[in-house]
Picture: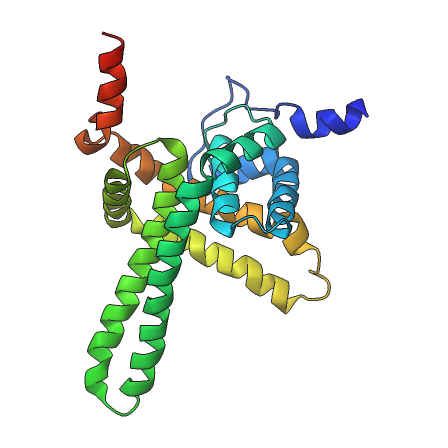
Length: 243
């Protein structure tokens, strides 16, 4: 059974130190080519977690934690890292997930309501546009918040603030990632039944990797801001005990 254990616990291949650094889509493709088998296994872990009725936001946070490690080219021990992240972010991810699900759900409902009303009254186009922009912004915030949460522990207020800032300064990469995720599922639908194995092998993990890849730069930028570097009260208290 050694081979079975090694399949889940061995380190990834990594990148040669002498290799030229790539950026953008080239880096995305290089990372995917290097980690595709790990992504397949990560996809399976996510599905198994969902089948065990683990709250979806917690499983998404665990998957995001591993995907950020892929983006940063850190050593990953897939099963251990996934389970540890699942335990560590369980409650935080679940609470944030519920809050954003309600907020985005209300936004989608408002869009549908105003879109119907706008057919008869063009004045409803204004609240329709506002509802659309707010819903898109909340979706961007949710993606940035998820990535920021697994990159650094911080108070809820700071996390929410940095997520909003990241969504303002770099919205386009995450928008593109969300369109990429939508494209994955549209491809699954369009090419069914040939694409029947897409959700079981890559759709979830590749989609999350795309979001983590797109949000990572903005996350690094906002984590360097003064509001992110100020120690919270718990950190100050812990430091005081060692004095």
